[in-house]
Image 1 (spheres, one colour):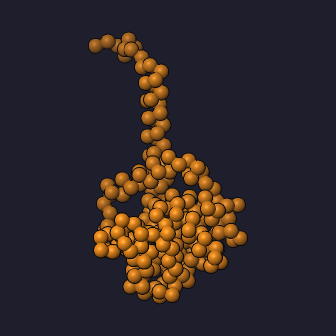
Image 2 (image 1 turned 180 degrees about the vertical axis):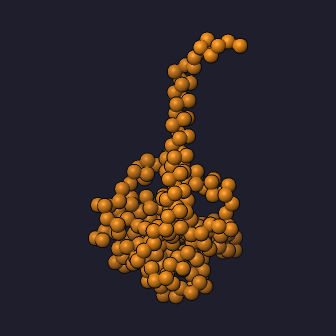
Image 3 (image 1 turned 30 degrees about the vertical axis):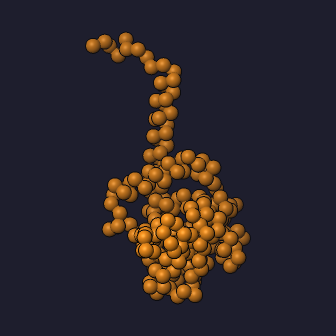
Length: 216
């Protein structure tokens, strides 16, 4: 066996690929750590509204586990007096009805009055959730907002709202008992990739250093 010093050195292209792969891998797992840590934090405080981000609706209009957990978390916050109304954000996906309409049924079943729920049924992505929700929040004069979603989703959600000029607090829906550790790891790494591939979103900053919406 030849000494290592006598082995052919990798070419410039190969070295570049290895360095890029190392940087990408380190970036993904570093971001995944941030996504996980951020999603574990409960930030809910007194607010003007709770924004619940939609999730998949199954065939027959059956809510997915994520949708149920998000609404249950928002309902618990509502009953604690965190905010007087809910904005349910989510359009029609593969299976009707809209995510927002399914969430309304869940919220009412959890004791939230239908009169305290506002539907946003145009969204088909987290970007849409932020863009269309901000319009409704402005129309209704809301300033301080708590966004509810799965833990791994919250960092990207906050960044989307920041890009719309709005700062939000976040509240994680419980995942114990409905998501295995491996699945949580998968979705966390997936979110890290999504952020890494969109640096403009990752770099979005709080508007003017405020802790609420415009004018807060």
